[in-house]
Length: 279
Image (cartoon, rainbow, N blue to C red; front, side, top):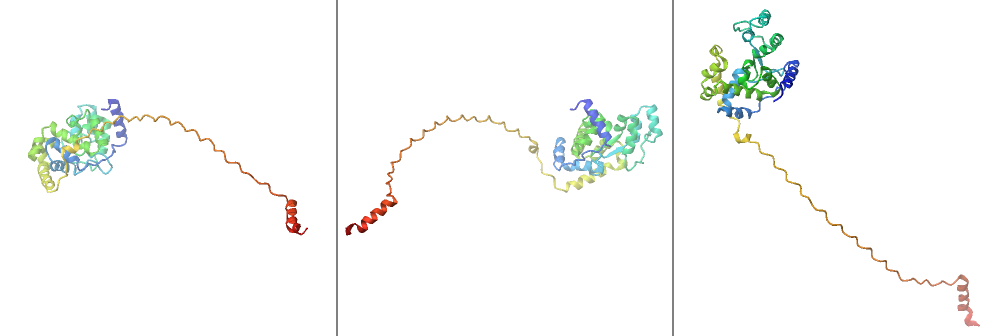
């Protein structure tokens, strides 16, 4: 795990970038793989994702999907100057209201100017729309660490956090039993019925149950240990081959060159041959 100083620097960097991240989508195999942790298939996980985030963990600007909740910001700020400032700016009020803007990030950035941690805790984040105030149940040390992981880790990180939250709140039993009302009560709060979360979950599950699941088994996650490299084979050098001495040269037989008669000698011989018999 990164040191607190390193995490703080990394968070400051993604904050300066407006929480724009990798926006890495889920792989098909991530759903059955992580659902296996709590004994459910991908249909149950699909249903929760569909209802909570309309099927994705990032917005069109590659930021984690986020909904800032002013009534939670009010609760996460102690009475005093910070809360008063938040109320005056319309960023905090004691009871939930329906008036959500189409983009919650401007509100969040304003709220972070008042109190960064309280603002991050007061928003729901990512694929599972987990409230920042539930960072411990999601498996993180701080709201900043959770948001940083959501920005950089992609939807697989969001789903891992969602599974952690479900287990920490003992909602895996309800999910396995398809007790949608019980699951929605624990996941979305006691007013879940006002938004019909339970009926939406049931309908989404029914829809996904008709679709063929992704082939997966736990054995597919087994990491094969790398082969231990064998020691290199040392080949002893061959002994040097002594060079054979070159054979002694065989002297060639002497060539006798017969002296050729001179021109005048040949003339004399011709005269003898021609006129000698006439004398």
